Image 1: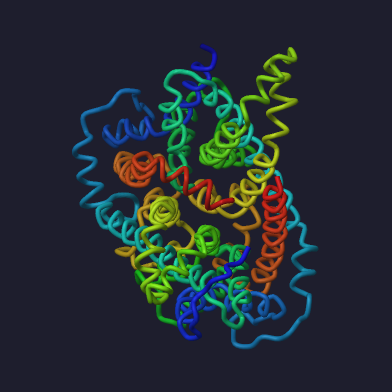
Image 2 (image 1 turned 60 degrees about the vertical axis):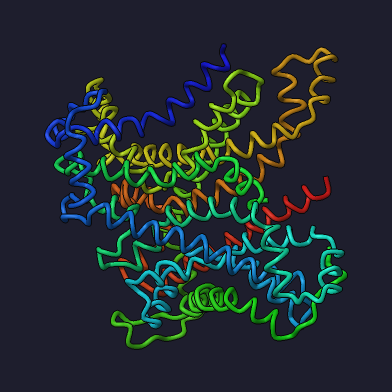
Length: 273
Length: 293
């Protein structure tokens, strides 16, 4: 009984901010601006969501949420797919080949764990400017797709694949590319699925990088766009539209985590260890 | 562990590594090297000329009382976030690990906040604690507690700690639950037969077995509080009021991006880089230890 009470309390603490946001997104701007947000939904939901989706709102006449959601989805999917693709091939090279400087390359990838974007902001932007990659999808995506953790995970997994598989492939006359496509990829699909969930959320939730690299507002992602709508946090903000946008920004990643829960937990506990 | 059988080929492995090496080289190593180079230079206001100044940027940063203030503030912020997020996650995980009806439903209801971006978590908390429109902000004021996080630095700090910890609990919960479920039931039964009460069983048997997970999470939480909370601070308080919520990472941003003080920003970046390296190495020593279990 006590156990249930504790857990329900925990669930409520997590859910309440979201509940309030959903409620806020169904009232008109004056009700919220006066500070009279009731605890039950109002009747303005349809109007608020259609304004958020198609027009946008906020002090600086924001970007429509539809556009920002599209940008976020492109970014999150491409970051996840890109990270998985380049990690799969580099882990394959390191595990299934012997070549000069093999371990050096491995360590070079490994060290990037220790260089988060936050500590190399200015020079990285400089590189982007030099490469003419600001305000573009490539600029949003490419610098984020190096992944030491994904490479480590795939390496770990490849090392458990028995040597006999490789021997059998050689006897059958299959080359390394064929072996990769016919054996390694199918065997890795659980890892790939699990990792995709984690990396999709990672891409979706990026904040500092899109904030710095994009100033063309039609390229804005929804996480950055939403916080820009708030301006200085005044009570005069269009809170109804902001709350509707917040709900839209929350839905896709939460849906991915809840629907793919099994993969997600597996991916998380494996990647991090 | 190495493979004994492998493919021949000289060009192919390099080709397979190439995309990853290009990305890390261009966007990790080159900028990191530039940061180190810049940290030894001082540029004039227009960026036209620069001169080598040795460790001067570092000594300036480290002897700047306002930088030391933000270092202290970061320590306070990070440890509060970590302790709050770890303690509540451990408590919830212990509850969810009991064999009760609906345990899976509770798990689902507790893990989704992982998907909430820190910056969005900040917006949710702002909406609750806004002094004029927030349900809690208004309630506090109605009770006679003058609540305004935009004017009161301690309140601003409290708010970013709560928002940051709220978002991190689900992550810790997943790891604690996995850790709890890997403890052999026979060990707990043996302790129960020996007459150990539940609380005693938890502190003498469960907690020590869970301590590697807890330690790993502590490091992860500190790294999270250091770096990933930029979005929370940027959208909630912008480092203010005054400098009350300016953490080290926020300062690198203001000095470098806003004030264009490159030498100082680069020196701060290098100091933070060293810190990440230390934290990551500590984390990997833990992983090594875990492998030997």
